[in-house]
Amino acid sequence: MKLISIVVPVYNEEDNIRHFYEAIREVMEKTIYDFELVFVDDGSKDTSRPILIELENEDSRVQPIFLARNYGHQAALTCGLDHADGDAVIMMDGDMQHPPELIPVLLRHWEDGYEVVQTIRKTTEGVSFLKKATSAMYYKVLNGLSQVHIQEGGSDFRLMDRRVVLAFRQYREHARFIRGMIGSMGYKQIQVDFVAPPRFAGVSKFSPKKMLHFAIDGILAYSTLPLRFGLYLGAVCAMLSLILFFTVILDKFVYDDAVPGWATMTSCMLFFGGMQLMVLGVIGEYIGRIMEEVKNRPLYLIGKDKPKDVQKKN
Ligand code: UDP
Ligand code: MG
Image 1 (tube, rainbow, N blue to C red):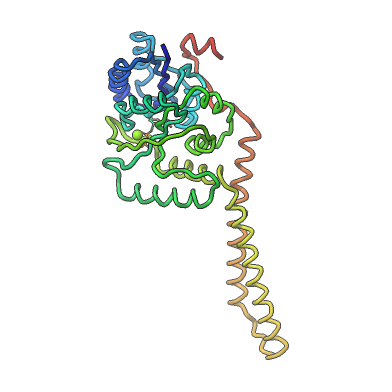
Image 2 (image 1 turned 135 degrees about the vertical axis):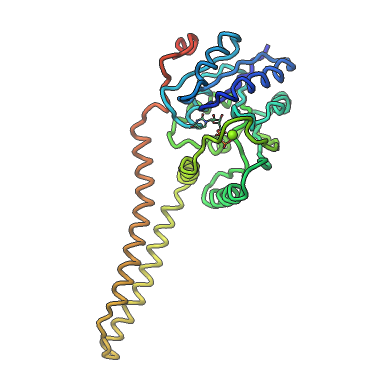
């Protein structure tokens, strides 16, 4: 019988885990497949850990992995994909915002020969207008800047065939934007729309700061266009300063009207100084990222309480 792995990153989800487990069991036991439920505990500080150990003792299909600290959603997903044994792997959130009822639909597309079944979140119930608007704007900017097209609303709820999972394991970059990585890999892909319900319990684990970093990662990992923007900006400024230079010369030699131009000087200095700092900042961002990649540290560390079979694999 074919095995389906369900990979779920969890961070402080004590009130969701059991409910989620029951929902998955109900859906998966109606299918013709075996399943394993790979929970990646991303350094939870609440009682998620003991709940996962309890579930593992009750049901051997539950396979928790405990990370050494909080590495973030994308690293936790990567860890799950590294340890999933299934013929197909489904990754989803553990807060019921990725509806388990959609799993049979994903499986059907897989049976039809699709190697990546990507879900697209059409709307999220109970999300503020501001979050929706900034998200829409972000995808416009991202797609304008990068070579790969990243669908607006593309979520990290997807099915991947084992072949795709094995390919994905070779991608070890630290700036992870998994939806872009998989989008750029090719393979036979199909999209499925869904409406995300509000969280079952708890609050979102993404602070505005985490969201902003994730958004910047997405842009800088997929495009060197901001660097080129610096180049264009420099060229335009050089042109402008040339015009200024001629005006000054004209003032001095033709009109003999060389007033001590304090205002012009100051504003030019501020303008060009600011511009240079900005472009330096953009370059700095890239250098920082190069440093991260060059260090080549592991993407995540697994903590002490490893289940036996994970220990075996490492
Ligand atoms: N998550 C994680 N590590 C983190 C933040 C979140 O593993 O640092 C998990 C979280 O437990 C959930 C999923 O990633 O299962 C999505 O997070 P969340 O629901 O907070 O994000 P949102 O739906 O608000 O975008
Ligand atoms: Mg959520």
